[in-house]
Length: 373
Image (cartoon, rainbow, N blue to C red):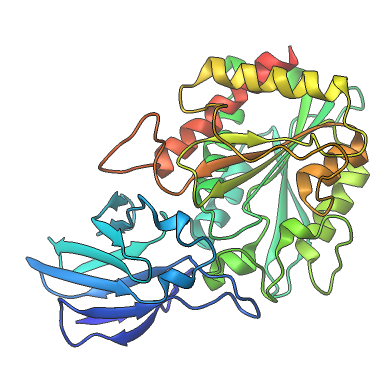
């Protein structure tokens, strides 16, 4: 038996692995940070063998205990199809039990979205005449920050921004982007064509390349939470936000979606900018319009569960959605997806999955069309 995490987004520490029914593991913290919850590792064992894996420091994870309640880990034999496996939390240990049908199996907090797949997404997107990749700059580890510009940048067009994965462990956000981008670039899709008649899209599929490759939950290469940097980013600490914010200032912005995943809530939901100083009736009407549009196109979305709404003037202005709404006077939303399952439409085998996140990305295009027409 051998357990390893020496690959893209790998994260695990082996404490004890001399018995298949008592494997003891721990999750590494994000570099220069106390955040941890993302795990991703490989177990090379035997076919037709039961393995019991205990993550012994799960009780101290960033979103414990709520993040572990009702949670089931994902596993894959081929790194393509990720299915849920029996998982339980006792207040300290997260125990994963799995009967191996093949010798080698991968386990993760959610289905990984690799840096290699990210590069394929960028390279494939440029095959469309409507899409131009733009190099914004580099991260602290020297990885490229890439923005996709989709559509004609005519001055009369609305400028729609969609960014994702500020928190690298929230891989469902980039699965969402893959679905969103794929449909937007389909020149036989009527919704995509109608949207591109009047809008240009600025898309950043991965806001945190370094944290993604390092196997972080929430921070970049130096332990900075990017979604607390929007008021005053720097090239020394948060170049990812600095570069994207600079592009927003240069290009302009009329609408922004910031795509995330939530560890605790088993629902898809939106969080708006109600607490910003200049929030007004026009922005409220815009928020309500987009919510109603999304409700009308997919049962995967709901409005009953979500974050508490900030009181007037009490928004955290370092957060992307709040900073964008205040700076540009524009509709800005944080879109959250679950790590667990959508409790309204549960799937015992796969839970919330890459394919469902991709489909939600496609459905959001319809909601945008309905909202903007």
